[in-house]
Length: 100
Image (tube, rainbow, N blue to C red; front, side):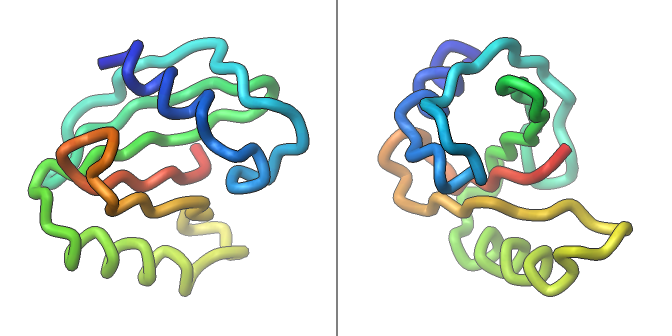
């Protein structure tokens, strides 16, 4: 799974993650499984991100989580969310990428 996540990140447009340079993944660590997602910490340069693979595969629930997190951006009690990928092109479930 880590190799697949690395490939996914390194294909992303760096601007989507607030970066200016090509993305180079340094390390990936599995955080564990939450109620409805599998979580990994992805280290890119001086930034740590959460790669959240939604286990329920429900696009509607992923979109709701994304929108709810967007409401609380710039607050200290919720992570900033960078991306919702619900295309299922690279993974069978929707993906969220958040600040760690």
